[in-house]
Image (cartoon, rainbow, N blue to C red; front, side):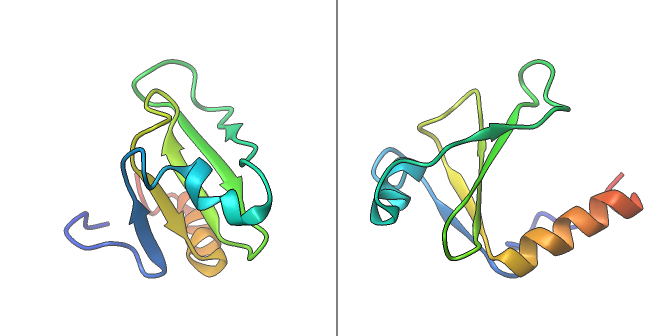
Length: 89
């Protein structure tokens, strides 16, 4: 998988002004983040939350005010399928 271009259906919401809390403010409250069960220790800690429009926000749990990746529901499902198949190893 190339990191040269963003994933289809993905956008970045970076910095404090574009934090996930700000992104979810339209949702009527802050997001509830879920930490990956595979994230045992930094620096490989990932958290996700789903918004009401089925999009998924992904962030580095070690940098909660850092950049947040926003994936469409379809892009998230494609990513999970690729990981499950071992395509990204």
